Length: 122
Image (cartoon, rainbow, N blue to C red; front, side, top):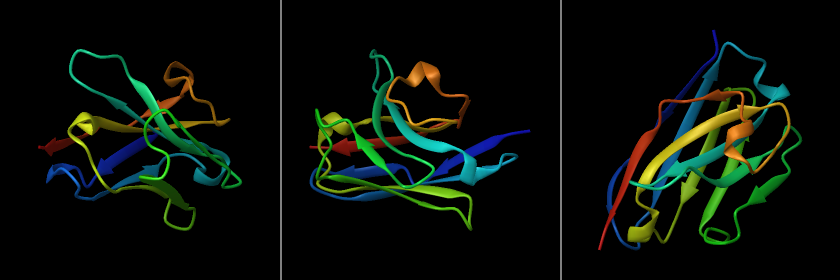
């Protein structure tokens, strides 16, 4: 059974930082691209950033490039999302997801975590 478990969310002031982690089990982690997707209240899920099996990185440049960094540790079956200079509009539930190929459409991802809440106060 595949499990993706996110951690590291919380409440932070604008301008602050958070580091999210996603621990994977039940799959061969190195064979999967990993993505971070977020969903704000009343909005659809949107792709944030993803990392391929070979560490290629794709950002949603619309709003996060330069502030968010993704990394993976295949030895620990974990993917990380470092978020800096957070803004109130970054408030959302953040999900990690796994897919065979790195894509930016959330609907394509095979496996999902339960999500972790990130709240940025102004």
